[in-house]
Image (cartoon, rainbow, N blue to C red; front, side):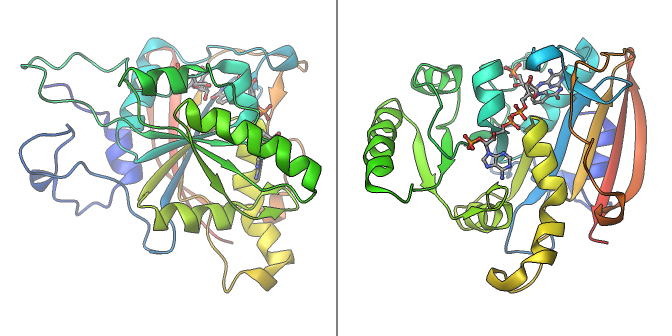
Amino acid sequence: MAKPPSILFNTLFRADTDWDHVSLYDPDDDRPVPSPMADDTRRPWVTLTFAQSLDAKIAGEAGKQLILSGKESMVMTHWMRSMHDAILVGIGTALNDNPQLNTRHLPQLSDDGRKKYNLPRPIILDTHLRLRSDCKLLSNYKVGTGRRPWVVSTTPGSDEGFSAWEKKKKILEAAGARVINIEPSQAGLSIPSLLTILRTLGVRSLMVEGGAGVIKSFLTSAQLQDIAPSDQPSLIQTVDAIIVTVAPTFVGQEGVGYGDDLLASKMLNMKHICTELFGPDTVMGFTTTLS
Ligand SMILES: NC(=O)C1=CN([C@@H]2O[C@H](COP(=O)(O)OP(=O)(O)OC[C@H]3O[C@@H](n4cnc5c(N)ncnc54)[C@H](OP(=O)(O)O)[C@@H]3O)[C@@H](O)[C@H]2O)C=CC1
Ligand SMILES: Nc1nc(O)c(N)c(N[C@@H]2O[C@H](COP(=O)(O)O)[C@@H](O)[C@H]2O)n1
């Protein structure tokens, strides 16, 4: 039977996980699908993951989508998707790439079709409700090949802004989306607030795929709370693990990066867990703690 690569077991799950009592397939007898879990029960476990070139670019000039991962590491990413309750991208990625965020590259399951891979719920960070109602995430939901997407937004302050926003909300809801409102912060939607809300909605694990703005936000959210902790009783850790695919290619300075203005002194502590080769790509797994 096809099995996920060991880098995922090693990076995302505790060493004492009892694999006899969980199943990777949904539904498969009565055993639950496993999910990485944070010790902090106020929020989901967060895995930040993306593919980059050797010069740390995740997209080409003007955001052109690049397929950096080879087929072997892409399959690894789809296994990772199957091991999380939800998968998050920013509206920049949703508009630019029109992604599906499903598990279609996993090996065919050779049974009567009863067993399925777990499909993560798509979540889009989209303050102004710019998501297109004909995007693939919504059409997959309509035909039953994807979970209902959740669109995370903030209600605009002015009356004028509110009526335009309400109109867009109705269109997206009619197309199948669930719109969730949260409070704004200096850097867009507040990531700590988002995480606590997602946990109350039953999300135990969140895979964050990007793009550049979202990667930066998750990496820097703990440091922002440090500056303005008044609305948070205590720090919420925003990343538990980082799994990076490095493709053996250079994109060049026109490409899109995510790390140019990150401050080393404010970064999370990283612990290297393991590195595995997938075809031409190198995949590194780290766990993180607040510094
Ligand atoms: N190689 C890889 O693994 C991946 C590459 N990509 C690439 O990344 C590029 C897209 O990156 P980018 O343009 O930065 O877009 P993002 O997908 O990072 O979306 C950013 C937008 O999300 C909204 N947003 C709301 N709240 C937040 C928040 N707290 N933090 C950050 N963003 C927030 C903002 O729009 P608003 O104000 O309207 O809400 C913001 O402009 C594409 O070229 C894509 O191909 C994407 C994913 C993976
Ligand atoms: N793992 C990985 N490798 C790459 O080379 C990539 N460009 C991405 N991009 C992410 O995957 C999304 C596309 O997903 P679907 O194939 O449509 O399911 C894209 O939007 C990025 O989030 N990832």
